Length: 153
Image (cartoon, rainbow, N blue to C red):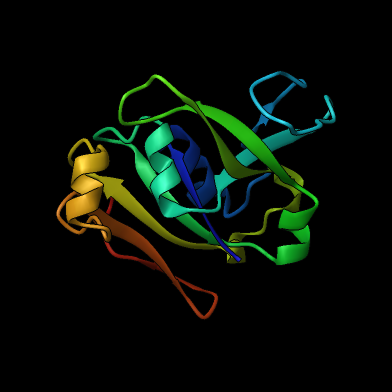
């Protein structure tokens, strides 16, 4: 199942250098920000089901949009609801489907595409250009398990 994530350069650099996810992720504790149950000894990465949900995060210049294709069984056991301020008016808390996946369960073959954000993106840009082609440069594509770097970052 295709899911989306926004990350910083440091995370992406570790992934591509190690060709793995063993050195990334964060330890989380149960909170009122979402419905996930965390193992405090494990590191997690969060993913969104819907592409437009990336707008709940800071889609700023010099960050990266990552597209993953993670097996449905892994996502189902990691599914939860995150609570985010509406990205248009910041007055309402929205319930957003998200996945908190243990980093140890993520494989390099799941990473399908990485795009560098070259201009800040907000909801208006997203409405005009759903592919965000004007706002991002694709720097990584996975083709049948082979890595293709299109642009140095």
